[in-house]
Image (cartoon, rainbow, N blue to C red; front, side, top):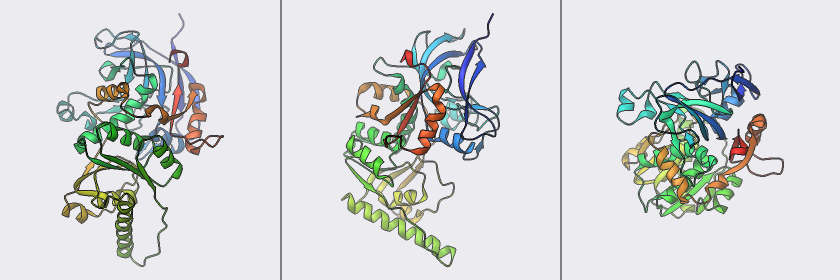
Length: 385
Protein backbone atom coordinates (compact mmCIF):
# COMPACT_ATOMS: atom_id res chain seq x y z
CA UNK A 1 0.00 0.00 0.00
CA UNK A 2 1.42 3.40 -0.97
CA UNK A 3 1.90 6.04 1.74
CA UNK A 4 -0.28 9.14 1.48
CA UNK A 5 1.63 12.38 0.96
CA UNK A 6 1.17 16.13 0.99
CA UNK A 7 3.13 18.56 -1.16
CA UNK A 8 4.53 21.42 0.94
CA UNK A 9 6.56 24.59 0.48
CA UNK A 10 9.17 24.31 3.24
CA UNK A 11 11.48 26.90 4.74
CA UNK A 12 14.55 24.97 5.86
CA UNK A 13 16.24 25.77 9.15
CA UNK A 14 19.33 27.90 8.62
CA UNK A 15 18.19 28.95 5.13
CA UNK A 16 16.64 32.26 4.17
CA UNK A 17 14.93 33.42 0.99
CA UNK A 18 14.73 29.83 -0.20
CA UNK A 19 11.73 27.49 -0.20
CA UNK A 20 11.88 23.80 -1.05
CA UNK A 21 8.91 21.95 -2.54
CA UNK A 22 8.72 18.61 -0.74
CA UNK A 23 6.56 15.51 -0.74
CA UNK A 24 5.88 14.64 2.90
CA UNK A 25 4.23 11.63 4.47
CA UNK A 26 0.65 12.30 5.48
CA UNK A 27 -1.46 10.48 8.06
CA UNK A 28 -5.22 10.20 8.73
CA UNK A 29 -6.72 12.78 11.11
CA UNK A 30 -6.81 12.12 14.84
CA UNK A 31 -10.28 11.79 16.44
CA UNK A 32 -10.55 15.57 17.07
CA UNK A 33 -9.11 16.63 13.70
CA UNK A 34 -10.24 17.10 10.11
CA UNK A 35 -8.20 16.80 6.93
CA UNK A 36 -8.47 19.91 4.78
CA UNK A 37 -7.44 20.04 1.14
CA UNK A 38 -5.97 23.55 1.04
CA UNK A 39 -7.12 25.69 -1.87
CA UNK A 40 -6.05 29.28 -1.12
CA UNK A 41 -3.45 30.71 1.25
CA UNK A 42 -2.85 34.42 1.68
CA UNK A 43 0.74 35.44 2.42
CA UNK A 44 1.26 37.95 5.20
CA UNK A 45 4.01 40.04 6.74
CA UNK A 46 5.01 37.48 9.37
CA UNK A 47 5.47 34.85 6.64
CA UNK A 48 7.69 37.29 4.78
CA UNK A 49 9.81 37.97 7.89
CA UNK A 50 10.46 34.24 8.32
CA UNK A 51 11.28 33.88 4.62
CA UNK A 52 13.58 36.90 4.52
CA UNK A 53 15.28 36.73 7.91
CA UNK A 54 14.61 33.26 9.35
CA UNK A 55 12.81 34.86 12.26
CA UNK A 56 9.84 37.03 13.16
CA UNK A 57 10.63 39.28 16.11
CA UNK A 58 11.84 37.06 18.96
CA UNK A 59 10.77 33.86 17.21
CA UNK A 60 13.63 32.23 15.33
CA UNK A 61 13.17 29.25 13.00
CA UNK A 62 14.81 26.30 14.77
CA UNK A 63 13.58 23.51 12.51
CA UNK A 64 12.10 23.17 9.02
CA UNK A 65 8.71 24.86 8.84
CA UNK A 66 5.80 25.17 6.41
CA UNK A 67 4.68 28.80 6.26
CA UNK A 68 1.17 30.22 5.69
CA UNK A 69 -1.74 30.73 8.09
CA UNK A 70 -4.48 32.53 6.11
CA UNK A 71 -6.33 29.75 4.33
CA UNK A 72 -9.45 28.00 3.15
CA UNK A 73 -10.13 24.62 1.61
CA UNK A 74 -12.31 21.51 1.46
CA UNK A 75 -12.75 18.91 4.19
CA UNK A 76 -11.75 15.49 2.82
CA UNK A 77 -11.78 13.42 6.04
CA UNK A 78 -13.01 13.82 9.62
CA UNK A 79 -11.87 12.25 12.88
CA UNK A 80 -14.16 9.89 14.78
CA UNK A 81 -15.29 12.53 17.32
CA UNK A 82 -15.89 15.42 14.89
CA UNK A 83 -19.48 16.64 14.58
CA UNK A 84 -19.27 20.30 13.46
CA UNK A 85 -18.13 19.80 9.84
CA UNK A 86 -18.68 17.20 7.13
CA UNK A 87 -16.62 15.70 4.34
CA UNK A 88 -16.98 17.86 1.25
CA UNK A 89 -17.67 21.04 3.20
CA UNK A 90 -15.84 24.25 2.25
CA UNK A 91 -14.14 25.79 5.28
CA UNK A 92 -11.90 28.54 6.60
CA UNK A 93 -9.02 27.55 8.84
CA UNK A 94 -8.50 29.54 12.03
CA UNK A 95 -4.76 29.33 12.54
CA UNK A 96 -4.50 29.51 16.35
CA UNK A 97 -4.94 26.29 18.32
CA UNK A 98 -5.69 27.27 21.92
CA UNK A 99 -5.84 25.03 24.98
CA UNK A 100 -9.51 25.70 25.93
CA UNK A 101 -8.77 25.09 29.60
CA UNK A 102 -6.74 28.08 30.89
CA UNK A 103 -8.14 31.23 32.48
CA UNK A 104 -7.91 33.21 29.24
CA UNK A 105 -9.65 30.55 27.15
CA UNK A 106 -12.44 30.11 29.68
CA UNK A 107 -13.01 33.87 29.90
CA UNK A 108 -13.36 34.23 26.13
CA UNK A 109 -9.93 35.81 25.51
CA UNK A 110 -8.26 32.78 24.00
CA UNK A 111 -6.00 34.94 21.83
CA UNK A 112 -3.96 35.45 25.03
CA UNK A 113 -3.68 31.70 25.74
CA UNK A 114 -0.11 30.96 26.79
CA UNK A 115 -0.37 27.44 25.32
CA UNK A 116 -1.38 28.78 21.89
CA UNK A 117 0.06 26.92 18.92
CA UNK A 118 -0.19 29.04 15.80
CA UNK A 119 0.21 27.71 12.28
CA UNK A 120 3.48 28.80 10.62
CA UNK A 121 4.84 30.28 13.84
CA UNK A 122 8.22 29.48 15.37
CA UNK A 123 6.99 30.54 18.83
CA UNK A 124 6.83 26.94 20.04
CA UNK A 125 8.98 23.87 19.48
CA UNK A 126 8.25 21.73 17.60
CA UNK A 127 6.95 24.37 15.22
CA UNK A 128 3.36 24.13 14.03
CA UNK A 129 3.36 23.81 10.24
CA UNK A 130 1.24 26.16 8.18
CA UNK A 131 -1.01 25.97 5.15
CA UNK A 132 1.38 26.18 2.18
CA UNK A 133 0.73 22.53 1.37
CA UNK A 134 -1.86 20.54 -0.51
CA UNK A 135 -3.54 19.11 2.62
CA UNK A 136 -3.20 19.28 6.36
CA UNK A 137 -4.83 18.01 9.55
CA UNK A 138 -6.27 20.65 11.88
CA UNK A 139 -8.45 20.56 15.03
CA UNK A 140 -12.11 20.69 14.08
CA UNK A 141 -13.00 23.32 16.70
CA UNK A 142 -10.97 25.92 14.78
CA UNK A 143 -12.40 25.09 11.36
CA UNK A 144 -15.34 27.19 10.17
CA UNK A 145 -17.86 26.37 7.41
CA UNK A 146 -17.94 28.89 4.58
CA UNK A 147 -21.17 30.69 3.65
CA UNK A 148 -22.21 29.97 0.06
CA UNK A 149 -21.26 33.50 -1.04
CA UNK A 150 -17.68 33.16 0.27
CA UNK A 151 -14.86 32.11 -2.02
CA UNK A 152 -11.72 30.31 -0.82
CA UNK A 153 -9.87 33.62 -1.11
CA UNK A 154 -12.47 35.14 1.20
CA UNK A 155 -11.71 32.31 3.61
CA UNK A 156 -8.06 33.36 3.53
CA UNK A 157 -8.95 37.04 4.02
CA UNK A 158 -11.03 36.11 7.08
CA UNK A 159 -7.80 35.78 9.07
CA UNK A 160 -6.46 39.35 8.64
CA UNK A 161 -10.02 40.69 8.76
CA UNK A 162 -10.39 38.99 12.14
CA UNK A 163 -7.51 41.09 13.44
CA UNK A 164 -9.47 44.23 12.57
CA UNK A 165 -12.76 42.92 13.93
CA UNK A 166 -11.02 42.26 17.25
CA UNK A 167 -9.49 45.75 17.25
CA UNK A 168 -12.80 47.39 16.31
CA UNK A 169 -14.59 45.59 19.13
CA UNK A 170 -11.96 46.77 21.60
CA UNK A 171 -12.39 50.30 20.27
CA UNK A 172 -16.17 50.06 20.78
CA UNK A 173 -16.55 51.52 17.33
CA UNK A 174 -20.01 52.96 16.68
CA UNK A 175 -21.84 54.26 13.59
CA UNK A 176 -20.99 57.92 13.09
CA UNK A 177 -17.45 57.63 14.40
CA UNK A 178 -14.55 58.97 12.36
CA UNK A 179 -11.48 56.84 11.66
CA UNK A 180 -7.88 57.59 10.78
CA UNK A 181 -5.74 54.70 9.53
CA UNK A 182 -1.94 54.76 9.60
CA UNK A 183 -0.57 52.41 6.93
CA UNK A 184 -2.51 51.01 3.98
CA UNK A 185 -1.11 47.57 3.45
CA UNK A 186 -3.59 44.70 3.67
CA UNK A 187 -4.32 45.31 7.36
CA UNK A 188 -4.80 49.06 6.88
CA UNK A 189 -7.07 48.58 3.88
CA UNK A 190 -9.16 46.11 5.84
CA UNK A 191 -9.32 48.62 8.71
CA UNK A 192 -10.72 51.18 6.27
CA UNK A 193 -13.20 48.72 4.78
CA UNK A 194 -14.43 47.53 8.15
CA UNK A 195 -14.83 51.04 9.56
CA UNK A 196 -16.94 51.99 6.53
CA UNK A 197 -19.03 48.82 6.88
CA UNK A 198 -19.59 49.69 10.55
CA UNK A 199 -21.08 53.05 9.60
CA UNK A 200 -18.09 55.37 9.95
CA UNK A 201 -18.89 59.00 9.23
CA UNK A 202 -15.47 59.46 7.67
CA UNK A 203 -12.43 57.26 6.94
CA UNK A 204 -9.06 58.74 5.99
CA UNK A 205 -5.62 57.17 5.65
CA UNK A 206 -1.93 58.07 5.69
CA UNK A 207 1.18 56.23 4.52
CA UNK A 208 4.67 56.94 3.19
CA UNK A 209 3.92 55.08 -0.05
CA UNK A 210 1.98 57.23 -2.55
CA UNK A 211 1.06 54.23 -4.72
CA UNK A 212 -0.65 52.47 -1.82
CA UNK A 213 -2.52 55.65 -0.95
CA UNK A 214 -3.65 56.03 -4.55
CA UNK A 215 -4.90 52.44 -4.44
CA UNK A 216 -6.84 53.13 -1.22
CA UNK A 217 -8.39 56.27 -2.69
CA UNK A 218 -9.25 54.92 -6.14
CA UNK A 219 -10.89 51.80 -4.73
CA UNK A 220 -12.97 53.65 -2.17
CA UNK A 221 -11.29 52.38 0.99
CA UNK A 222 -10.65 55.95 2.18
CA UNK A 223 -12.30 59.25 1.29
CA UNK A 224 -9.10 61.27 1.72
CA UNK A 225 -5.43 60.30 1.98
CA UNK A 226 -2.13 61.99 2.77
CA UNK A 227 1.44 60.94 2.08
CA UNK A 228 3.78 61.39 5.03
CA UNK A 229 7.25 62.72 4.36
CA UNK A 230 10.18 60.49 5.17
CA UNK A 231 12.20 62.22 7.85
CA UNK A 232 15.87 62.09 8.76
CA UNK A 233 17.15 62.72 12.27
CA UNK A 234 19.26 65.73 13.10
CA UNK A 235 22.30 65.30 15.29
CA UNK A 236 21.26 66.47 18.79
CA UNK A 237 23.97 66.70 21.42
CA UNK A 238 22.20 64.70 24.12
CA UNK A 239 19.63 61.92 24.52
CA UNK A 240 17.22 64.42 26.06
CA UNK A 241 17.52 66.67 23.02
CA UNK A 242 16.90 63.66 20.79
CA UNK A 243 13.73 62.78 22.69
CA UNK A 244 12.53 66.37 22.64
CA UNK A 245 13.12 66.51 18.89
CA UNK A 246 11.08 63.34 18.31
CA UNK A 247 8.21 64.53 20.51
CA UNK A 248 8.04 67.92 18.82
CA UNK A 249 8.22 66.35 15.38
CA UNK A 250 5.33 64.02 16.22
CA UNK A 251 3.21 66.88 17.54
CA UNK A 252 3.93 69.07 14.52
CA UNK A 253 3.27 66.20 12.14
CA UNK A 254 -0.04 65.43 13.83
CA UNK A 255 -1.15 69.06 13.67
CA UNK A 256 -0.32 69.12 9.98
CA UNK A 257 -2.35 65.96 9.40
CA UNK A 258 -5.37 67.33 11.25
CA UNK A 259 -5.14 70.49 9.18
CA UNK A 260 -4.86 68.58 5.90
CA UNK A 261 -7.92 66.50 6.80
CA UNK A 262 -9.79 69.53 8.24
CA UNK A 263 -10.31 67.61 11.46
CA UNK A 264 -8.86 69.93 14.09
CA UNK A 265 -10.53 68.03 16.96
CA UNK A 266 -9.07 64.70 15.85
CA UNK A 267 -10.55 61.29 15.04
CA UNK A 268 -12.68 59.06 17.24
CA UNK A 269 -10.70 55.90 16.47
CA UNK A 270 -7.12 55.77 15.18
CA UNK A 271 -5.93 52.47 13.73
CA UNK A 272 -2.12 52.32 13.92
CA UNK A 273 -1.19 49.59 11.43
CA UNK A 274 2.49 50.35 10.82
CA UNK A 275 4.28 49.65 14.08
CA UNK A 276 6.59 52.58 13.27
CA UNK A 277 7.49 54.86 16.16
CA UNK A 278 6.69 58.19 14.45
CA UNK A 279 3.19 56.97 13.49
CA UNK A 280 2.51 55.61 16.97
CA UNK A 281 3.53 58.97 18.43
CA UNK A 282 1.34 60.91 15.99
CA UNK A 283 -1.58 58.56 16.64
CA UNK A 284 -1.98 59.88 20.16
CA UNK A 285 -2.04 63.49 18.98
CA UNK A 286 -4.50 62.78 16.15
CA UNK A 287 -7.08 61.05 18.34
CA UNK A 288 -9.96 63.18 19.54
CA UNK A 289 -10.19 63.99 23.24
CA UNK A 290 -11.64 60.84 24.80
CA UNK A 291 -10.84 58.86 21.64
CA UNK A 292 -9.03 55.58 21.13
CA UNK A 293 -5.74 54.53 19.57
CA UNK A 294 -5.58 50.89 18.46
CA UNK A 295 -2.04 49.51 18.30
CA UNK A 296 -2.23 46.87 15.57
CA UNK A 297 1.07 47.08 13.69
CA UNK A 298 3.97 45.02 15.04
CA UNK A 299 7.21 46.90 14.51
CA UNK A 300 9.28 48.91 16.95
CA UNK A 301 9.76 46.98 20.19
CA UNK A 302 10.39 50.01 22.43
CA UNK A 303 8.71 53.31 21.67
CA UNK A 304 8.96 56.79 23.17
CA UNK A 305 5.37 57.92 23.78
CA UNK A 306 3.77 61.31 24.53
CA UNK A 307 1.88 59.79 27.48
CA UNK A 308 1.00 63.13 29.06
CA UNK A 309 -0.83 64.10 25.87
CA UNK A 310 -2.83 60.86 26.13
CA UNK A 311 -3.48 61.08 29.87
CA UNK A 312 -4.57 64.72 29.94
CA UNK A 313 -7.05 64.17 27.12
CA UNK A 314 -8.12 60.65 28.22
CA UNK A 315 -7.02 59.07 24.97
CA UNK A 316 -7.17 55.31 25.48
CA UNK A 317 -4.29 53.30 24.02
CA UNK A 318 -5.27 49.69 23.34
CA UNK A 319 -3.02 46.84 22.36
CA UNK A 320 -4.48 44.28 19.95
CA UNK A 321 -3.02 40.80 19.63
CA UNK A 322 -4.47 38.45 17.01
CA UNK A 323 -8.21 37.85 17.60
CA UNK A 324 -10.78 35.72 19.35
CA UNK A 325 -14.35 34.69 18.52
CA UNK A 326 -14.23 36.63 15.25
CA UNK A 327 -14.38 34.10 12.42
CA UNK A 328 -18.19 33.77 12.17
CA UNK A 329 -18.50 37.57 12.01
CA UNK A 330 -15.65 37.83 9.49
CA UNK A 331 -17.16 35.24 7.17
CA UNK A 332 -20.61 36.79 7.47
CA UNK A 333 -19.20 40.19 6.52
CA UNK A 334 -17.25 38.78 3.59
CA UNK A 335 -20.39 37.06 2.32
CA UNK A 336 -22.56 40.15 2.78
CA UNK A 337 -20.93 42.37 0.17
CA UNK A 338 -20.66 45.20 2.71
CA UNK A 339 -16.87 45.37 2.40
CA UNK A 340 -16.54 47.54 -0.69
CA UNK A 341 -14.06 46.31 -3.33
CA UNK A 342 -12.59 43.80 -0.89
CA UNK A 343 -11.62 41.39 -3.68
CA UNK A 344 -9.33 44.02 -5.21
CA UNK A 345 -6.96 43.64 -2.26
CA UNK A 346 -5.81 40.37 -3.85
CA UNK A 347 -3.44 41.59 -6.55
CA UNK A 348 -1.38 38.50 -7.43
CA UNK A 349 -1.82 34.72 -7.48
CA UNK A 350 0.66 31.82 -7.75
CA UNK A 351 0.41 28.03 -7.71
CA UNK A 352 1.97 26.26 -4.74
CA UNK A 353 4.96 25.13 -6.82
CA UNK A 354 5.82 28.82 -7.39
CA UNK A 355 5.74 29.85 -3.72
CA UNK A 356 9.33 31.02 -4.02
CA UNK A 357 8.34 33.52 -6.72
CA UNK A 358 5.37 34.65 -4.61
CA UNK A 359 7.61 35.59 -1.69
CA UNK A 360 10.17 37.25 -3.93
CA UNK A 361 7.40 39.38 -5.42
CA UNK A 362 6.28 40.43 -1.94
CA UNK A 363 9.83 41.56 -1.20
CA UNK A 364 9.91 43.70 -4.36
CA UNK A 365 6.52 45.35 -3.85
CA UNK A 366 5.88 45.62 -7.59
CA UNK A 367 5.68 43.05 -10.37
CA UNK A 368 7.55 43.06 -13.67
CA UNK A 369 4.81 45.25 -15.19
CA UNK A 370 5.10 47.83 -12.41
CA UNK A 371 1.83 46.81 -10.76
CA UNK A 372 1.53 47.32 -7.00
CA UNK A 373 1.63 44.22 -4.78
CA UNK A 374 -0.92 44.21 -1.95
CA UNK A 375 -2.10 40.68 -1.09
CA UNK A 376 -0.54 37.60 -2.70
CA UNK A 377 -2.48 34.34 -2.79
CA UNK A 378 -0.99 30.88 -3.27
CA UNK A 379 -3.33 28.28 -4.79
CA UNK A 380 -2.68 24.71 -3.69
CA UNK A 381 -5.60 23.24 -5.60
CA UNK A 382 -6.64 25.68 -8.36
CA UNK A 383 -8.96 23.18 -10.01
CA UNK A 384 -11.13 23.12 -6.88
CA UNK A 385 -11.65 26.88 -6.54
